Image (cartoon, rainbow, N blue to C red; front, side, top):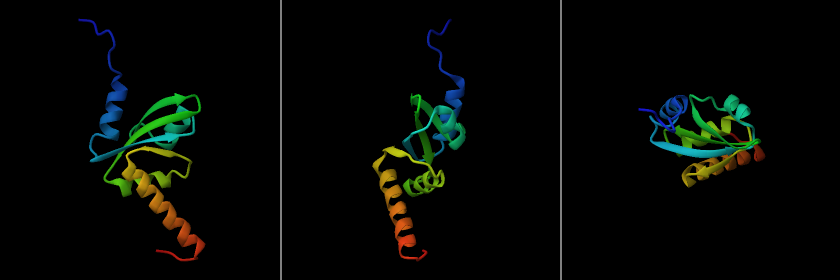
Amino acid sequence: MELIDPPDPALLVSRSVATGPYPLSATIRLPVSMNQALRLIPATVGTHRPESPDTTIVDIGGPDADGLARYLLSLATPLRVLSPDAVRQALLRRTQELFEDNANGQSR
């Protein structure tokens, strides 16, 4: 039996490792090429697909929205959380806290 459109085995493994064991997954857009995105977020951490030559979509898993937000902030690169809204809100909350702590000279 010949498969007409066989699945990509590397993609299947990447998906199961990157998002499979986690209770929450998020989709983000990075304004970088696929090669740059893979350097930022390894294939063992996220599943990548090019959106354009200069933009990459990454699916990533995590323990909860706050944990994913912390990881995304650690990338120190522009990004957009496409879904879910809980991760976007956690990222906004953490960014606001960071801004306020530095604007006021305080630390948490």
